[in-house]
Length: 98
Image (tube, rainbow, N blue to C red; front, top):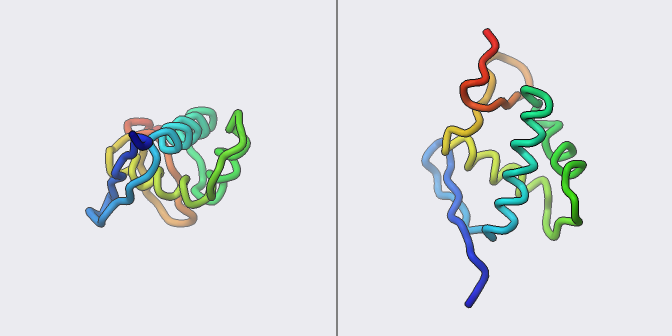
C-alpha cells in the first residue's frame, strides 16, 4: 500500500496537485503556526518562517510546498489574503482587526 495522498484545492478553481498527506500536514501546521504567532504574515516571509518552525529536516522544496499548501488553505477558507495594496499578506479567516 502506498503513502496516503491529498489532492489540493486552488482558490481560483484551477487544478490542484496530488501530494503526500504527511508533507501536507507538516507544512499546513507550520503555516498556521507562523500566522498565529504573528497575527498576519507577508507571503514573502512565509517560507522562511515555515522552515524555521519545522522540527525535522524536510525532504522537498519548502517554497514549493508552502505555496501549494497556502493556496489550498485559501481555497478551504482557513486563511485569507489581507485586502489592500502592496505585498501579499496572509491571516486566518475571521482574524480581521478593523
